[in-house]
Length: 332
Ligand SMILES: Nc1ncnc2c1ncn2[C@@H]1O[C@H](COP(=O)(O)OP(=O)(O)OP(=O)(O)O)[C@@H](O)[C@H]1O
Image (cartoon, rainbow, N blue to C red):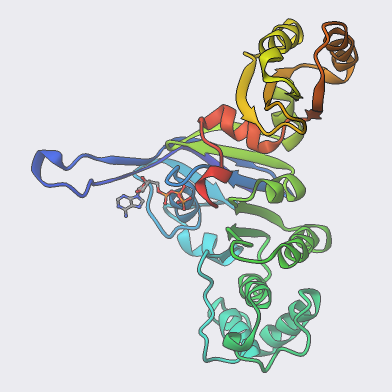
């Protein structure tokens, strides 16, 4: 459905004269998305996600490379590409004054479908997206979640086989997000749609996507299923809280024997007793097998624990590994 080769976009810098350095927003990416896939596109702020999306949806011309989308060339067949895709931008495209149903119909007619078709498709989408009863409502009188679903109805009214969603659930509360996830995966199950979405939420990518592409500094640094990406991270995180901080070094030594990464000791975690505790953590492959022996060793050495936690790698760990940045740290 999407095939990009060496797709690149350079912008002129904003400085003057020699200071006008070029910004390589997208540095030549290869992307392949198969029919019926839900693919998540992740990356830190400024990594090149929106620029890539805009090139694939023909809103921006590539400076190098090529891409076909739904079988059409983005550079020479932009009209055909546009007719084949749905694009739901970050900001949404509804005008606050118009009535929801009219907006959706207008949008469909803009794409060349008849008024009758637009109305029946629109009403069908309202039903599927839980917007029943809101046909006459103005978007300004809708909740954030309803407005976002209206954006999606607009993006789908002409029955595209490929849908691009730019941060579909940003700003929604957890319940509205989970609800929208159901609708997005329904698009695939019910309509066989292919979905390419950007997101800042790793739980969203995890829950929704068959595959995740990670972009950093304009280049794709990973492309795999969420589970395979998590398996690449070196082991489960084992975190101990040692009751007596003076025994942290001894605990670190014991943990170090089974660890696959450096052991980190964090000072002054509040202990439960009179003494201040200390955090001791490291990644351990197959921690499930290893921790029993570790606990016995700690016990034999007279090291009391306030707690022990074993956590499987999350996509946030993957992201940190790949980009050196945590998506959560960016306040997204
Ligand atoms: N019109 C432009 N002129 C100059 N530089 C630009 C322009 N558009 C984007 N850039 C730069 O290109 C880089 C990639 O931007 P892009 O918007 O694609 O990132 P992003 O991954 O979508 O970021 P975010 O997560 O913040 O939306 C950034 O360094 C950005 O400043």
